Length: 86
Image (cartoon, rainbow, N blue to C red; front, top):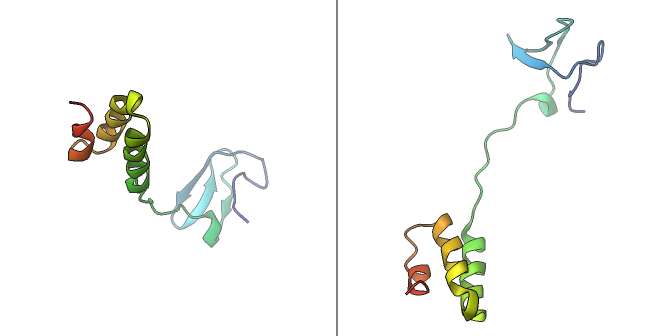
């Protein structure tokens, strides 16, 4: 179970100190379990979003400039999107 609040006082102000999870208010210390530890940063891929927006450029030519602008917000070097701006 993920520790999200102190089980003694209910505070949600928890921090990690010396290998323990410590409550900021009552100073209770808890041994962290695997679920309580911070997760590593994740990488978000936007390739499928870019492909979907480029497909919308083809399917909806009236709004292609708008979709191309969104693609360039995600990938400023995308040459395919630049074609729709001209």
